Image (cartoon, rainbow, N blue to C red; front, top):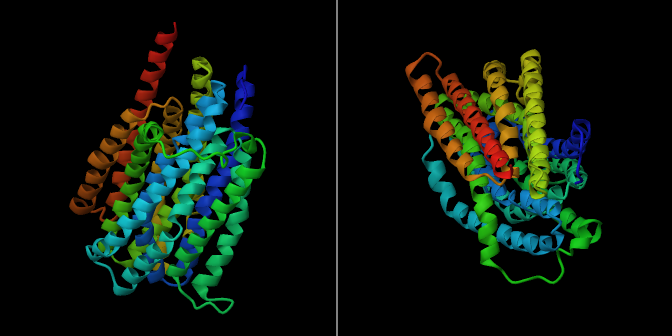
Length: 451
């Protein structure tokens, strides 16, 4: 990271940070994307099982990773304030925290998988795939959290290309492992959707190992001596990180879990509808990596400028990122509209599933726009370390407005299953409006404070 003076310089630096993050996020999501596609090729029940498993796993994993994302603005602030000596201690405590959170999630998951799946009206094969897909993923939970903590540290320094390299190495390995375990190659029995979970868990170990080696050996990370002179667990530092991370994590959890809740509710509409929903949601989420990457870039850039107390520069980065998010959301909507048949065909060769997937994709066009506004603003607010208000905004807009709206539309109108997606659009739109209002108010308040 470095100081910039002109808008052109800011756009250039933002792109330098953004492009590797985008490649990283797309590659990371591509792992789930290929899990879904390759499981779908193994059968509709395999795809539906992975859909149920993912709907339970993704909100938890993204929520915990959201907590660990506190490391990015913390490191960015230290760099902006020229306090790099504090980085080693914070990252070490963050690693301890990642291990602790991973252990807690593993233990809770062990006891809750069966009770939760028993609450759903699932076909026996779908339930079997979902259960053992989750158990397989469970072996990679702690490595995944350690990797994500180190990644946030790396990105907080502005060294986003390093994260990109790690994931680009891991992605083809993940695809190969999927091929081996899902379809049964090289003497391994075919495991269908369960094999996708095994492949992903192994990939988490690979990501963690690569990140540790790089942080230990490569500059500028080596300078911070992250793995030297380990300090004892410091609960005060944990609290400081959790104060920032927990609201971030829960905000992300509320947004992601509403999609998971819709997936669970749609299980009542049959395997083909559930498979089509998962396929459409998978592709829409892949496109969402663009505004999400913009958000992560803005957290770093805004956090750096706020740490250096250059509020005007932080504001310029904020609006540059929001405009970019809107532009890319329109681009994503166009892709969905023009390539609906081709996209649906990627996930299944079942004509009914393809037609249902196309219908769900049309609704995805509209919530792409809301995401294109809301995600960058969330990144800006994290850069300001303003996370508590956004937590409540996410809870209200997604769960108090979005999901109830979807339930009413699905059950009391002719929209049926598509009503839930209309509810998603309503919730995401309300979230975008409230987040923008909060950002505008915060920027005005900081301007008055410094004048």
